[in-house]
Length: 312
Image (cartoon, rainbow, N blue to C red; front, side, top):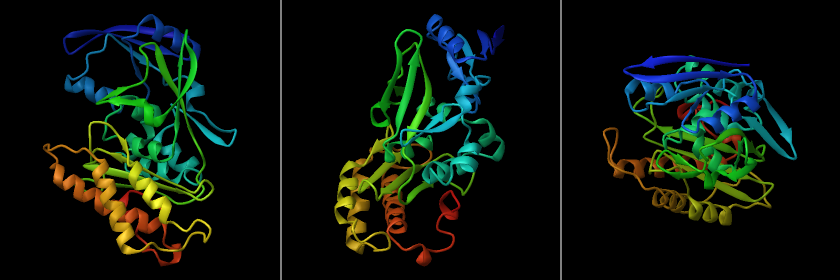
């Protein structure tokens, strides 16, 4: 069923269309490429209320049931764009701990109950908490359109510029594909307070013992979320993959890794923080996350996750 209501919003006309099936959503998107998709509304409606967004149409995807589903598929986890932060924490925390840690840092419980993975991805604000994790995990984004079919794009190629993505005008985000964790995953975020705060900078780190790979994603420290590839390669070259977890890295190795992370960022000065502070903060959380990932669990401080946006 398709429902629509004409309306007015702060002096401009806006049409609100609600769909209940995926095929309907694609049809509406194709007919009105300027339609702005909305699910939980926790990002979009803030922009509308602030006057920074004036959509001709709001396309409500909330009732589309398939977007709220997740499933294992060919060794991956396919997570629907409509899966909320709360469900990422409660249902996928063991399989995708980095993403669950990031979700825990989002707003209040009410916001986590409404906000979705696809909404965070589609808004593409560099401060979005999911972006660093998707980059660090080598995630893939499933896009679909009424005429172009379905395609998968690496998260690294999804971000095209400040709040710009590879999503075509007639496409919608359908799902995100991630491999289940095969090693430590951490997310750390620096803000002006411990909760309900916008990131000054953020970082995700994954250590995949199956693929002998380290992934590092950076958020809120440049115009687009970014990978720290030199840092990834350096850390991977110094981890003893055959020896298994529990072999801490030398302090100089961890320090150089942190410096490489900071060099990968492209921060700016703004009202929340200066570029120099952002680089410094990144080195701190880069050292901490790599140390946690290469330290035996029994020797980690009990609050090492709680202080930085998550719980075991």
